[in-house]
Length: 442
Image (cartoon, rainbow, N blue to C red; front, side, top):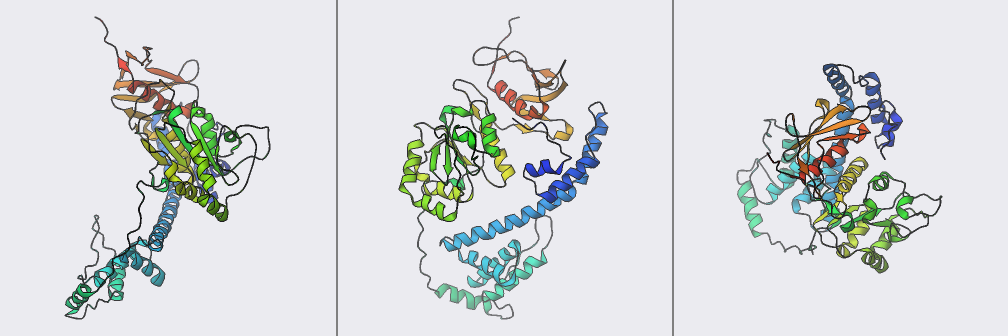
Protein backbone atom coordinates (compact mmCIF):
# COMPACT_ATOMS: atom_id res chain seq x y z
CA UNK A 1 0.00 0.00 0.00
CA UNK A 2 1.32 3.45 -0.87
CA UNK A 3 2.39 5.64 2.03
CA UNK A 4 -0.39 8.19 2.57
CA UNK A 5 1.70 10.13 5.12
CA UNK A 6 4.25 11.28 2.55
CA UNK A 7 5.06 14.95 3.12
CA UNK A 8 6.82 16.56 0.13
CA UNK A 9 8.01 19.41 2.37
CA UNK A 10 9.96 16.96 4.54
CA UNK A 11 13.43 16.12 3.24
CA UNK A 12 13.40 12.81 5.15
CA UNK A 13 10.50 11.58 3.02
CA UNK A 14 12.45 12.24 -0.18
CA UNK A 15 15.52 10.53 1.25
CA UNK A 16 13.40 7.50 2.12
CA UNK A 17 12.30 7.38 -1.52
CA UNK A 18 15.86 7.25 -2.86
CA UNK A 19 16.83 10.91 -3.26
CA UNK A 20 20.32 12.02 -2.13
CA UNK A 21 20.28 14.25 0.98
CA UNK A 22 21.35 17.41 -0.91
CA UNK A 23 18.68 16.90 -3.58
CA UNK A 24 16.07 16.06 -0.95
CA UNK A 25 16.77 19.29 0.95
CA UNK A 26 16.35 21.44 -2.18
CA UNK A 27 13.14 19.67 -3.23
CA UNK A 28 11.64 19.98 0.26
CA UNK A 29 12.54 23.69 0.35
CA UNK A 30 10.76 24.26 -2.97
CA UNK A 31 7.64 22.53 -1.63
CA UNK A 32 7.74 24.60 1.57
CA UNK A 33 8.15 27.86 -0.36
CA UNK A 34 5.50 26.98 -2.96
CA UNK A 35 3.00 24.52 -1.43
CA UNK A 36 -0.04 23.30 -3.32
CA UNK A 37 -3.01 25.65 -3.24
CA UNK A 38 -6.33 24.25 -1.97
CA UNK A 39 -8.57 22.62 -4.60
CA UNK A 40 -11.00 25.52 -4.21
CA UNK A 41 -8.43 27.97 -5.63
CA UNK A 42 -8.84 28.99 -9.28
CA UNK A 43 -7.24 26.62 -11.77
CA UNK A 44 -5.02 29.37 -13.21
CA UNK A 45 -3.56 30.10 -9.78
CA UNK A 46 -2.92 26.42 -9.09
CA UNK A 47 -1.13 26.05 -12.42
CA UNK A 48 0.92 29.18 -11.72
CA UNK A 49 1.91 27.77 -8.34
CA UNK A 50 3.04 24.51 -9.98
CA UNK A 51 5.15 26.45 -12.48
CA UNK A 52 6.74 28.47 -9.65
CA UNK A 53 7.67 25.29 -7.85
CA UNK A 54 9.15 23.83 -11.05
CA UNK A 55 11.30 26.94 -11.48
CA UNK A 56 12.46 26.67 -7.85
CA UNK A 57 13.55 23.08 -8.44
CA UNK A 58 15.59 23.85 -11.56
CA UNK A 59 18.89 23.72 -9.60
CA UNK A 60 17.96 20.20 -8.50
CA UNK A 61 17.18 19.15 -12.03
CA UNK A 62 20.44 20.66 -13.28
CA UNK A 63 22.40 18.82 -10.58
CA UNK A 64 20.59 15.60 -11.45
CA UNK A 65 21.47 16.14 -15.10
CA UNK A 66 25.15 16.60 -14.24
CA UNK A 67 25.14 13.56 -11.97
CA UNK A 68 23.50 11.47 -14.67
CA UNK A 69 26.07 12.71 -17.21
CA UNK A 70 28.93 11.73 -14.92
CA UNK A 71 27.36 8.36 -14.22
CA UNK A 72 26.81 7.79 -17.94
CA UNK A 73 30.43 8.64 -18.71
CA UNK A 74 31.66 6.24 -16.04
CA UNK A 75 29.37 3.55 -17.45
CA UNK A 76 30.63 4.14 -20.99
CA UNK A 77 34.27 3.88 -19.98
CA UNK A 78 33.60 0.81 -17.83
CA UNK A 79 31.75 -0.91 -20.66
CA UNK A 80 34.48 -0.11 -23.18
CA UNK A 81 37.16 -1.33 -20.79
CA UNK A 82 35.20 -4.55 -20.23
CA UNK A 83 34.91 -5.11 -23.99
CA UNK A 84 38.65 -4.65 -24.46
CA UNK A 85 39.47 -6.90 -21.51
CA UNK A 86 37.17 -9.62 -22.89
CA UNK A 87 38.77 -9.42 -26.33
CA UNK A 88 35.66 -8.01 -27.99
CA UNK A 89 36.92 -4.42 -28.27
CA UNK A 90 38.22 -2.82 -31.46
CA UNK A 91 41.43 -0.85 -31.96
CA UNK A 92 39.39 2.33 -31.71
CA UNK A 93 38.06 1.24 -28.31
CA UNK A 94 41.64 0.86 -27.13
CA UNK A 95 42.43 4.35 -28.44
CA UNK A 96 39.43 5.78 -26.57
CA UNK A 97 40.75 4.36 -23.31
CA UNK A 98 44.24 5.63 -24.13
CA UNK A 99 42.95 9.17 -24.66
CA UNK A 100 41.15 9.05 -21.31
CA UNK A 101 44.21 7.65 -19.49
CA UNK A 102 46.87 9.88 -21.09
CA UNK A 103 45.09 13.22 -21.31
CA UNK A 104 42.16 12.91 -18.92
CA UNK A 105 39.62 13.44 -21.70
CA UNK A 106 35.93 13.07 -20.98
CA UNK A 107 33.86 10.62 -23.02
CA UNK A 108 33.12 12.85 -26.03
CA UNK A 109 36.71 14.01 -26.35
CA UNK A 110 37.99 10.45 -25.87
CA UNK A 111 35.76 9.29 -28.71
CA UNK A 112 37.09 12.10 -30.91
CA UNK A 113 40.64 11.09 -29.93
CA UNK A 114 39.90 7.48 -30.89
CA UNK A 115 38.47 8.55 -34.25
CA UNK A 116 41.56 10.62 -35.00
CA UNK A 117 43.90 7.80 -33.97
CA UNK A 118 41.99 5.27 -36.09
CA UNK A 119 41.98 7.59 -39.12
CA UNK A 120 45.75 7.93 -38.91
CA UNK A 121 46.33 4.22 -38.32
CA UNK A 122 44.05 3.16 -41.20
CA UNK A 123 45.55 5.63 -43.67
CA UNK A 124 42.57 7.99 -43.76
CA UNK A 125 42.47 11.73 -44.27
CA UNK A 126 42.41 14.27 -41.46
CA UNK A 127 38.68 14.96 -40.98
CA UNK A 128 37.90 16.46 -37.56
CA UNK A 129 34.31 16.46 -36.34
CA UNK A 130 32.19 19.27 -37.71
CA UNK A 131 29.12 20.99 -36.34
CA UNK A 132 26.33 19.03 -34.68
CA UNK A 133 22.65 19.24 -35.59
CA UNK A 134 22.41 22.57 -33.79
CA UNK A 135 25.28 24.03 -35.80
CA UNK A 136 27.62 24.09 -32.79
CA UNK A 137 31.27 23.22 -33.33
CA UNK A 138 33.03 21.68 -30.30
CA UNK A 139 36.59 22.95 -30.40
CA UNK A 140 37.61 20.62 -27.57
CA UNK A 141 36.55 17.60 -29.65
CA UNK A 142 38.45 18.91 -32.68
CA UNK A 143 41.57 19.38 -30.55
CA UNK A 144 41.26 15.84 -29.18
CA UNK A 145 40.82 14.49 -32.71
CA UNK A 146 43.99 16.27 -33.84
CA UNK A 147 45.89 14.83 -30.88
CA UNK A 148 44.67 11.31 -31.66
CA UNK A 149 45.58 11.78 -35.32
CA UNK A 150 49.12 12.79 -34.34
CA UNK A 151 49.48 9.93 -31.83
CA UNK A 152 48.34 7.48 -34.48
CA UNK A 153 51.17 8.49 -36.79
CA UNK A 154 49.57 11.24 -38.84
CA UNK A 155 51.77 14.14 -39.99
CA UNK A 156 49.64 16.95 -41.31
CA UNK A 157 52.69 18.98 -42.43
CA UNK A 158 53.92 16.15 -44.68
CA UNK A 159 52.69 16.36 -48.27
CA UNK A 160 53.00 12.59 -48.76
CA UNK A 161 51.73 11.62 -45.31
CA UNK A 162 48.42 10.12 -46.47
CA UNK A 163 50.05 8.06 -49.22
CA UNK A 164 52.72 6.79 -46.82
CA UNK A 165 50.17 5.74 -44.20
CA UNK A 166 47.95 4.07 -46.80
CA UNK A 167 50.94 2.09 -48.07
CA UNK A 168 51.84 0.99 -44.54
CA UNK A 169 48.23 0.07 -43.74
CA UNK A 170 47.87 -1.98 -46.95
CA UNK A 171 51.05 -3.95 -46.25
CA UNK A 172 50.44 -4.44 -42.55
CA UNK A 173 49.84 -8.08 -41.77
CA UNK A 174 47.18 -8.29 -39.14
CA UNK A 175 46.34 -11.68 -37.75
CA UNK A 176 42.61 -12.27 -37.60
CA UNK A 177 41.32 -11.79 -34.10
CA UNK A 178 39.83 -14.89 -32.49
CA UNK A 179 36.08 -14.96 -32.73
CA UNK A 180 34.62 -14.92 -29.26
CA UNK A 181 31.80 -17.33 -28.59
CA UNK A 182 28.52 -15.46 -28.52
CA UNK A 183 25.48 -16.79 -26.69
CA UNK A 184 22.56 -18.00 -28.76
CA UNK A 185 20.30 -15.57 -26.89
CA UNK A 186 20.96 -12.39 -24.91
CA UNK A 187 21.88 -12.72 -21.26
CA UNK A 188 19.54 -11.23 -18.62
CA UNK A 189 21.97 -8.31 -18.19
CA UNK A 190 21.19 -7.34 -21.82
CA UNK A 191 17.41 -7.59 -21.51
CA UNK A 192 15.33 -4.44 -21.86
CA UNK A 193 13.46 -2.73 -19.06
CA UNK A 194 9.75 -3.52 -18.53
CA UNK A 195 7.24 -1.57 -20.59
CA UNK A 196 3.45 -1.36 -20.65
CA UNK A 197 2.99 -2.17 -24.35
CA UNK A 198 3.22 -5.96 -23.94
CA UNK A 199 0.19 -8.18 -23.58
CA UNK A 200 -0.82 -9.06 -20.05
CA UNK A 201 -0.18 -12.59 -18.81
CA UNK A 202 -1.90 -14.75 -16.21
CA UNK A 203 -0.12 -14.74 -12.87
CA UNK A 204 0.30 -18.51 -13.02
CA UNK A 205 2.42 -18.11 -16.18
CA UNK A 206 4.72 -15.37 -14.83
CA UNK A 207 8.15 -15.79 -13.27
CA UNK A 208 10.04 -13.26 -11.13
CA UNK A 209 13.66 -13.73 -10.03
CA UNK A 210 14.28 -11.33 -7.17
CA UNK A 211 17.54 -10.57 -5.37
CA UNK A 212 17.03 -11.04 -1.62
CA UNK A 213 19.25 -8.22 -0.40
CA UNK A 214 17.43 -7.03 2.76
CA UNK A 215 15.88 -9.66 5.03
CA UNK A 216 14.43 -9.33 8.52
CA UNK A 217 16.11 -11.41 11.20
CA UNK A 218 13.25 -11.44 13.69
CA UNK A 219 9.56 -12.15 13.61
CA UNK A 220 7.27 -15.19 13.34
CA UNK A 221 7.89 -17.76 10.61
CA UNK A 222 6.50 -16.56 7.31
CA UNK A 223 7.03 -17.11 3.57
CA UNK A 224 10.34 -15.70 2.41
CA UNK A 225 8.72 -12.90 0.40
CA UNK A 226 7.23 -11.64 3.68
CA UNK A 227 10.70 -11.43 5.20
CA UNK A 228 12.09 -9.17 2.51
CA UNK A 229 12.30 -5.57 3.67
CA UNK A 230 12.64 -3.62 0.41
CA UNK A 231 10.26 -1.56 -1.79
CA UNK A 232 10.02 -4.16 -4.57
CA UNK A 233 8.89 -6.87 -2.16
CA UNK A 234 6.41 -4.40 -0.64
CA UNK A 235 4.96 -3.69 -4.11
CA UNK A 236 4.59 -7.42 -4.73
CA UNK A 237 2.75 -7.91 -1.43
CA UNK A 238 0.44 -4.98 -2.20
CA UNK A 239 -0.49 -6.20 -5.70
CA UNK A 240 -3.65 -8.36 -5.81
CA UNK A 241 -2.97 -11.69 -7.46
CA UNK A 242 0.84 -11.39 -7.43
CA UNK A 243 1.03 -14.30 -4.99
CA UNK A 244 -0.05 -16.54 -7.86
CA UNK A 245 3.18 -15.89 -9.77
CA UNK A 246 6.25 -18.06 -9.35
CA UNK A 247 8.73 -15.95 -7.34
CA UNK A 248 12.30 -17.20 -7.04
CA UNK A 249 14.61 -15.49 -4.55
CA UNK A 250 18.37 -15.34 -4.99
CA UNK A 251 20.15 -15.08 -1.66
CA UNK A 252 23.78 -15.28 -0.62
CA UNK A 253 22.95 -17.85 2.05
CA UNK A 254 20.83 -20.34 0.09
CA UNK A 255 21.22 -19.56 -3.62
CA UNK A 256 17.93 -19.89 -5.54
CA UNK A 257 14.92 -20.61 -3.32
CA UNK A 258 11.14 -20.59 -3.67
CA UNK A 259 9.71 -17.46 -2.05
CA UNK A 260 6.63 -19.38 -0.91
CA UNK A 261 8.45 -22.39 0.55
CA UNK A 262 11.10 -21.09 2.94
CA UNK A 263 9.69 -20.14 6.33
CA UNK A 264 12.75 -19.09 8.33
CA UNK A 265 14.57 -15.78 8.58
CA UNK A 266 18.16 -15.57 7.36
CA UNK A 267 20.69 -12.95 6.42
CA UNK A 268 24.08 -13.10 4.72
CA UNK A 269 25.65 -10.29 2.75
CA UNK A 270 26.58 -11.04 -0.85
CA UNK A 271 30.33 -10.72 -1.38
CA UNK A 272 32.33 -11.09 -4.63
CA UNK A 273 33.86 -14.32 -3.29
CA UNK A 274 30.42 -15.76 -2.44
CA UNK A 275 29.12 -14.66 -5.84
CA UNK A 276 32.00 -16.51 -7.53
CA UNK A 277 31.00 -19.65 -5.66
CA UNK A 278 27.37 -19.38 -6.78
CA UNK A 279 28.41 -18.63 -10.37
CA UNK A 280 30.33 -21.91 -10.68
CA UNK A 281 28.12 -24.03 -8.41
CA UNK A 282 26.40 -26.97 -10.08
CA UNK A 283 24.05 -27.26 -7.11
CA UNK A 284 22.91 -23.64 -7.61
CA UNK A 285 22.10 -24.39 -11.23
CA UNK A 286 20.13 -27.46 -10.17
CA UNK A 287 18.24 -25.31 -7.65
CA UNK A 288 17.14 -22.91 -10.38
CA UNK A 289 16.18 -25.71 -12.75
CA UNK A 290 13.97 -27.29 -10.08
CA UNK A 291 12.14 -24.00 -9.49
CA UNK A 292 11.23 -23.27 -13.12
CA UNK A 293 7.59 -24.21 -13.84
CA UNK A 294 6.54 -25.77 -17.10
CA UNK A 295 4.87 -22.88 -18.93
CA UNK A 296 6.08 -19.27 -18.65
CA UNK A 297 4.96 -16.32 -20.79
CA UNK A 298 6.48 -13.41 -18.87
CA UNK A 299 9.86 -13.35 -17.06
CA UNK A 300 11.37 -10.53 -15.00
CA UNK A 301 14.81 -10.45 -13.36
CA UNK A 302 15.01 -7.91 -10.51
CA UNK A 303 18.71 -8.14 -9.67
CA UNK A 304 21.77 -5.94 -9.93
CA UNK A 305 25.53 -6.26 -9.46
CA UNK A 306 26.77 -9.65 -8.24
CA UNK A 307 23.21 -10.98 -8.10
CA UNK A 308 22.75 -10.26 -11.81
CA UNK A 309 26.13 -11.86 -12.55
CA UNK A 310 24.91 -15.06 -10.91
CA UNK A 311 21.70 -15.06 -12.96
CA UNK A 312 23.74 -14.51 -16.14
CA UNK A 313 25.91 -17.51 -15.31
CA UNK A 314 22.87 -19.79 -15.11
CA UNK A 315 20.82 -18.10 -17.84
CA UNK A 316 20.65 -21.21 -20.03
CA UNK A 317 18.34 -22.75 -17.46
CA UNK A 318 15.81 -19.93 -17.89
CA UNK A 319 12.94 -20.65 -20.29
CA UNK A 320 12.57 -18.88 -23.61
CA UNK A 321 9.30 -16.98 -23.39
CA UNK A 322 7.39 -14.18 -25.06
CA UNK A 323 8.60 -11.38 -22.76
CA UNK A 324 11.98 -11.39 -20.97
CA UNK A 325 12.91 -8.18 -19.10
CA UNK A 326 14.96 -6.93 -16.16
CA UNK A 327 14.94 -3.92 -13.87
CA UNK A 328 17.81 -1.51 -14.43
CA UNK A 329 19.33 1.93 -13.74
CA UNK A 330 18.73 3.69 -10.40
CA UNK A 331 16.81 2.22 -7.43
CA UNK A 332 13.91 4.61 -8.10
CA UNK A 333 13.67 3.43 -11.72
CA UNK A 334 14.00 -0.20 -10.68
CA UNK A 335 10.96 0.15 -8.43
CA UNK A 336 9.03 1.84 -11.25
CA UNK A 337 10.00 -0.97 -13.64
CA UNK A 338 8.78 -3.56 -11.15
CA UNK A 339 5.45 -1.75 -10.75
CA UNK A 340 5.08 -1.69 -14.54
CA UNK A 341 5.69 -5.43 -14.68
CA UNK A 342 3.24 -6.11 -11.86
CA UNK A 343 0.56 -4.02 -13.61
CA UNK A 344 0.62 -6.43 -16.57
CA UNK A 345 -0.52 -9.37 -14.47
CA UNK A 346 -4.05 -10.69 -14.69
CA UNK A 347 -6.14 -13.45 -13.17
CA UNK A 348 -6.80 -16.61 -15.15
CA UNK A 349 -9.73 -16.06 -17.51
CA UNK A 350 -9.61 -12.28 -17.14
CA UNK A 351 -9.55 -10.26 -20.36
CA UNK A 352 -7.32 -7.18 -20.24
CA UNK A 353 -6.47 -4.79 -23.06
CA UNK A 354 -2.83 -4.33 -24.09
CA UNK A 355 -0.92 -1.40 -25.54
CA UNK A 356 1.03 1.64 -24.41
CA UNK A 357 -0.94 4.20 -22.41
CA UNK A 358 -0.12 7.79 -23.37
CA UNK A 359 -0.16 10.06 -20.32
CA UNK A 360 -0.53 13.83 -20.32
CA UNK A 361 1.37 16.25 -18.11
CA UNK A 362 0.04 16.43 -14.57
CA UNK A 363 0.17 20.24 -14.56
CA UNK A 364 -2.62 20.30 -17.17
CA UNK A 365 -4.71 17.66 -15.39
CA UNK A 366 -3.79 13.97 -15.61
CA UNK A 367 -5.30 12.11 -18.57
CA UNK A 368 -4.45 8.76 -20.11
CA UNK A 369 -5.24 7.49 -23.61
CA UNK A 370 -5.39 3.91 -24.89
CA UNK A 371 -6.80 3.36 -28.33
CA UNK A 372 -10.02 5.36 -28.69
CA UNK A 373 -10.51 5.63 -24.92
CA UNK A 374 -9.48 8.56 -22.74
CA UNK A 375 -9.44 8.50 -18.93
CA UNK A 376 -9.51 11.81 -17.12
CA UNK A 377 -9.94 13.00 -13.57
CA UNK A 378 -13.56 13.97 -13.02
CA UNK A 379 -13.23 15.73 -9.67
CA UNK A 380 -14.45 14.76 -6.24
CA UNK A 381 -17.33 12.33 -5.84
CA UNK A 382 -20.31 12.70 -3.49
CA UNK A 383 -20.26 12.05 -0.56
CA UNK A 384 -16.57 11.05 -0.71
CA UNK A 385 -13.97 9.74 -3.13
CA UNK A 386 -12.74 10.82 -6.55
CA UNK A 387 -14.20 10.24 -10.01
CA UNK A 388 -12.47 8.83 -13.11
CA UNK A 389 -14.36 9.38 -16.36
CA UNK A 390 -13.80 7.18 -19.43
CA UNK A 391 -14.64 8.86 -22.75
CA UNK A 392 -14.51 7.88 -26.43
CA UNK A 393 -14.55 11.53 -27.54
CA UNK A 394 -14.34 14.86 -25.71
CA UNK A 395 -17.46 15.01 -23.55
CA UNK A 396 -18.80 11.63 -24.81
CA UNK A 397 -18.85 8.96 -22.09
CA UNK A 398 -17.93 5.38 -23.02
CA UNK A 399 -21.35 3.79 -22.48
CA UNK A 400 -22.68 0.45 -23.67
CA UNK A 401 -19.48 -1.57 -23.14
CA UNK A 402 -19.45 -4.98 -21.45
CA UNK A 403 -16.60 -7.24 -20.38
CA UNK A 404 -16.04 -10.84 -21.49
CA UNK A 405 -18.57 -12.08 -18.92
CA UNK A 406 -21.25 -9.71 -20.21
CA UNK A 407 -21.11 -7.41 -17.20
CA UNK A 408 -21.61 -3.74 -18.14
CA UNK A 409 -18.69 -1.38 -17.52
CA UNK A 410 -19.49 1.94 -15.91
CA UNK A 411 -17.90 4.96 -17.64
CA UNK A 412 -17.43 6.62 -14.24
CA UNK A 413 -15.20 4.95 -11.66
CA UNK A 414 -15.06 6.16 -8.06
CA UNK A 415 -11.87 5.62 -6.07
CA UNK A 416 -11.21 6.42 -2.43
CA UNK A 417 -7.54 7.45 -2.61
CA UNK A 418 -6.38 10.05 -5.11
CA UNK A 419 -2.77 8.88 -4.83
CA UNK A 420 -3.88 5.74 -6.73
CA UNK A 421 -5.31 7.83 -9.57
CA UNK A 422 -2.78 6.76 -12.22
CA UNK A 423 -3.03 3.09 -11.29
CA UNK A 424 -6.83 3.11 -11.33
CA UNK A 425 -6.90 5.04 -14.62
CA UNK A 426 -4.68 2.40 -16.21
CA UNK A 427 -6.86 -0.41 -14.86
CA UNK A 428 -10.03 1.23 -16.20
CA UNK A 429 -8.49 1.91 -19.62
CA UNK A 430 -7.36 -1.69 -20.01
CA UNK A 431 -10.78 -2.97 -18.95
CA UNK A 432 -12.48 -0.87 -21.64
CA UNK A 433 -9.84 -1.75 -24.25
CA UNK A 434 -10.71 -5.43 -23.77
CA UNK A 435 -14.47 -4.85 -23.72
CA UNK A 436 -17.03 -5.03 -26.51
CA UNK A 437 -19.84 -2.63 -27.26
CA UNK A 438 -23.30 -4.09 -27.58
CA UNK A 439 -25.66 -2.76 -30.25
CA UNK A 440 -28.59 -0.99 -28.65
CA UNK A 441 -31.94 -1.88 -30.19
CA UNK A 442 -33.89 1.05 -31.49
